[in-house]
Image 1 (cartoon, rainbow, N blue to C red):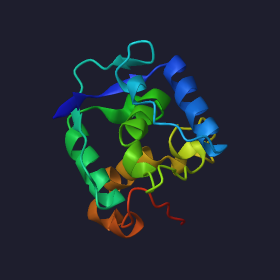
Image 2: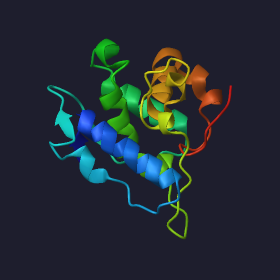
Image 3: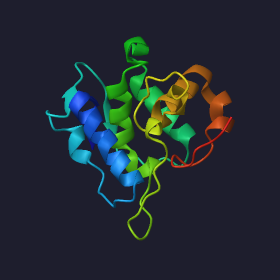
Length: 155
């Protein structure tokens, strides 16, 4: 089943960031997936693609999928869109930060899930950078993205 792609608004970004902060401090909380569809936290994008809850074996597979579903979209205005990329990270949060057997998770830095305005942290966003590498370099990016979606790489 496909879902329309949306973007988190300011309230949604704040709520997602607070969830990540609380979670990193040790609280066991369910991901706030309600932010994805609640109009108080996210907004629809006109004439935009749909996305599916797929399981990806690698970050490369995620990037190929995103490149395919976004190929007819002019992405220039979305390159720095914090709400758009953060919505996608929350959408696939279970793959980017999977729950362990005891229900705990080990989240990375906040900027891995919420696109940072800090230029130094922007390339660390799990979804945006994955899409960017595959859309620009295709299969050549495979060696950079051959790990599971939850595993961070270092260049």
